[in-house]
Structures are given as C-alpha cells and as structure tokens.
Image (cartoon, rainbow over all chains, first blue to last red; front, side):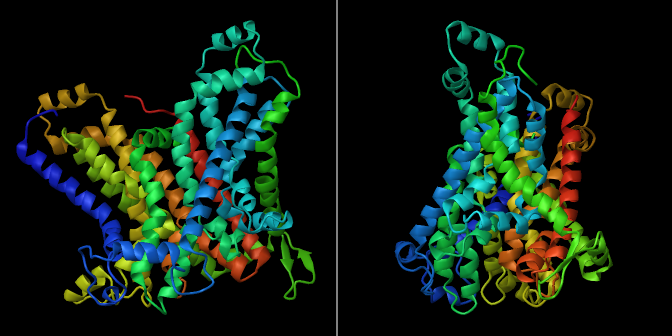
Length: 283
Length: 293
C-alpha cells in the first residue's frame, strides 16, 4: 500500500464484497433452489435461504430419472459421460501437442514449417464456423453417438502445441547433448527428460483443458442423438424446455449444481495452476 | 524455432506430428474447404441438383435485411458484453489491487464463474429472471416494471448480455489484477510522493499503463461474445422473441441444422471465418508488441 487511508480501504473492501456477492448470487440462488421441494419452488417469490431437502433432491436427481420425462438418461450416467469426454479431450490434446511440439522443436525434417502453419490455422477455425461440414465428416466416419466422435475432432490444439514449443525452447541444449552422450535415443530423451521437465505446464494446461472439455455444448449437441450419450451440460437445456410444462426447478437447479461442481472444484483446488494455465495459453 | 542441437531427419518426426496433422486435416481443413466450396453452390428446393453460382449466396446474404440486422445485433451484443464485464472487472481489480489483506481471498471468490459452462450461466440467469418465479422480476415489479423476456426483445437481449458478461467477469478480473500487480510499486509511490491521490493515480498512471491488457481483453471478449455464447442464447432465448437475440453463430446453426439451407449457411460460415481470422491476426500483432514500461 502506498499511503494509509483507512476510509478508502474500507470502501475497497465494501466494493469487493459487493463484487463477490454479484458474482456469487446466481450460484447461491441455484444452491438454494436445490435445497427446497418442488412445491415451494413454484411459489413466488422464491426463497433466498436454504431449505432442508438437499439430500432428497440429490438422490432424486442422481438416481431417479431426473425430470419425469422417461427417455432421458439418468443423471449419474450423464456425469460419467461428461467426465469421460473432459478427460479424453484433456489427455488427447496434451499428448498430441507434446508429440508435435517435440517433433517441431527437436527434429530437422522436410515440411517442418508447413506442419507448423497447418497447426496454427486451426486457431482460426473454431467449431462454430464449420459446424455443418464437420458434422458431415463425423457422420461419414460413423462416429456419431460415440466417445470418439465427441472427443477426437476437438483434440487438435494449436495453443497447446505453441505452449509446449515455448517450454521446449527454454530447455538448455546441454540437456540434449548430455543425453546423447549417455546414449539416449529421441524417445528416451522425450519421455525421461522433456516430459518430466514440463510437468507443471502439463498440469496447468490440464486444468484449463478439463474445464474446456467439460463445458463443451454445441459439439455434443450435434454429435449425440442417443440419450445414453448425453452430457450433463447438454441436459440442462432439455430440462429448461421441459420446465415449461412441469417446472421442477429444484431438480433442474440440482442438476445445474452437479454440472458445475467438477470444473469449479478444479479451478478452486488448483487455483495457482489454473491462473498459470490461463495466462500461458492465451498470451 | 529449431534447436541448435537437434536430431537428424528420419521417419520419427513424421510419426510424431501425424496424429495432430491427421486430425487437423480431417476435422479442420477439409470441413473448412467444404464450407468454402458449398458457399458457392445453390441447391434447388428438392435437393436434387446443385448449381455453381460463384458469389450469389454472399450477395443474397448482404441483401438480406435479416442477415444484416443479425450482423449489427452481434456487434452490439459483443460490445455490450465486453464493456459491461470489462468495466466491472476493472473496478473490482482496481480495488483488489489496493487491498493488502485478503487480496487472494477475493481473487478465489471471484474467479470461479470462469468454470461455469455458458449454457449453465444461461440457465442460472433465466431462472433468476423467470417472469413468474424469478427474484429479479419480483423486485422489478415493486418499482412498476413488468419483466418478460419471453415477449419483449429488449428484455431478452439484456438477459443474454447479463449472463454472458457475468461469466466473463472472472477472466477479465484475473488479467486486470495481474496487469496492475505487475506495475512496479516504485512508479506508483513516486506519483504518490508527487501528490497524486488514488483517483488521479488510477486515471493518469495505472489505466494508461495497463492499456495493452485492455486491448488484449477487448479482442478476447469479442471472440468470446461472437463464438462462445451460443450456449447462452440457445438455453435462454433460442434467438427469440422474433429473432431479437439471434447472433451470427446462432444463425449459422439455425439455418444449417433447422432450416437446412446449405449454401446460405456455408456462406455465413465463410464470413465468420474471415471474422475469426481478422481477430486472431489482431490478437497476434498485439502479442508481438509486448508491454514496455
């Protein structure tokens, strides 16, 4: 602090507390809604303090059919799908980006820069701008309604490749020289030296990519028609639609809560890695 | 780029880049090329024959009042989201930078909406603003305002802007706070010794010094509002009422998957590609000129 101004410090805290309330309010209301029974949630104004039905709602949401529409998959199944999708995307992106960054930084081979630019271009082609043709490709490959279709088209990653490239460039050349003197081949060098040296970067990237994968919406919406493949994030939209007929807001908000707990937990538990990952991948 | 000490060429590097390159070609380059190709085609009403029409699809789009309206609406939406969430984040970061005790605690409490999926953010806000149950319509009703985003386009637009901006506050806050904390304390102390009060220091010193961050965030927020808000729109308003919240990405999806207008949807995709490329180039040019104090 530069100077001592108690009043300004007080104001600072008040503004920040207001900010925290503003940021947290939607989540608080969601939590509160998930702790009341369905009847209470149909009476306006809705409560602002938690009720006593939390465990009941949790059980009904996880193991009941969620909302009474019979075709939907159970919520635990959707959570599992989301988890599988998020993990496959995160691992897939990290592995293929590590490998290609390794090739581009440590090998001299024809078309090296060509490959680099090809990977760079993917930055400019988010799913949203090539929805229909990408869907057709996946459909022609018979990958609709499968984990492969959900994840493989998303795991090419220019940002991750760039990040690992930067990391590898900071590793001193002497590392490779001494590894070679000791008789290590390229893959040995990669597995025993490069990967361990970049493990905090890998962890930071994993946090970001897990959230990215978990929160995918448009892509699973296109690829999955089978209820067994629905992800938890997708299911919210179907529930909101169903809510127009039978508003079971307690169940809907419980599902929303379950859908946001894993990524939010990851952010809070691994805050340092998260901040590092965010600033590294975007800059 | 290449290490001074490196391995000689062999089949190995090709094998190493192969997974990335194959996925890129199959799921990125090929579909993008398809989109460009299809944007030059018009299919007849029965889907029996297609005709190569050069730029007719684009001409149709640029003469289509609805498309132009969507275009301007998207710009308005992006600007509103960026300005709203960046200014809230800037104010909060400025105060958090001042606070010595508890700055990290505030950061922890402020950053986690980043992890909430856009569609969930939409669901939370649509619940809070539900005309019959929501807490805000209840409060607004007391001051005589009748909130109904199902009927009023302006209300629907405000709601999606709120939801989109709320989710982005965390991200902007994090970058603003990091930028402010990287300003050397000596500069700020020198200004304080010269008699500049907190407001003056913020206005004449801190804000200009973090302007590169502001610019960077402007680009990031624009990209976010253009492309990542699909979930919010889809969950909250489905582009309605009467298209009042249809933005470009939503229209591509809707015309392609619901309307099945392949050529038109492809032409829209191509326009979006140009927009992303422009934004990416702007972003990378910025990265090259790093902040200098």
